[in-house]
Length: 99
Image (cartoon, rainbow, N blue to C red):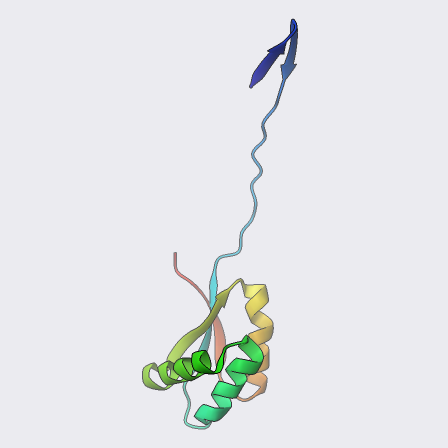
């Protein structure tokens, strides 16, 4: 892009910057026959910041479907949550969301 002012020519150089982005991920909680609904609900409230209603709904999906994506975000945000959930004896993984 070139701009002219009072017989002076100024050149402006535009540069595109490639920014690396992390692919979106999901925090998956898996159903098991060991943990109670109450424990899973309490964990989702404590670890993921869910409301009681959100946690109850997630726990029903987990129970009925075998797994459920309880939180979405980038890997580095979800990783500590995944660790905290598994430390409570609940199976959890992080999966990259297909785009």
